[in-house]
Length: 100
Image (cartoon, rainbow, N blue to C red):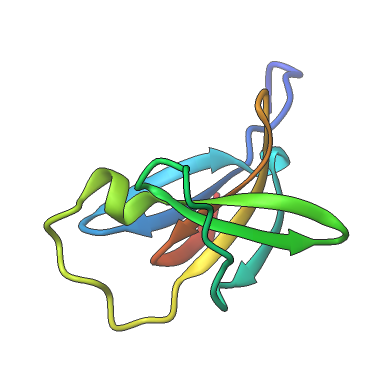
């Protein structure tokens, strides 16, 4: 940047009809969704948990949380393993678009 500031790098992903962005430094890994272990007392938008690098990661199904009435995508979903204030969380998304 001309002003000497840091470049902002984002990763774009699609959920239902919308495209969203998240800071690339928050994303640790992108993995194909291969199922999860359900958690009986979890809210309905929590798909379940998976183990990634010896860490139990809750998976949030963004499609069912944001667009419960939109039909499922034909594509195999992906999971963005992200780090947040709440800890490590997996975001189940329809597709990853690009890094900008």
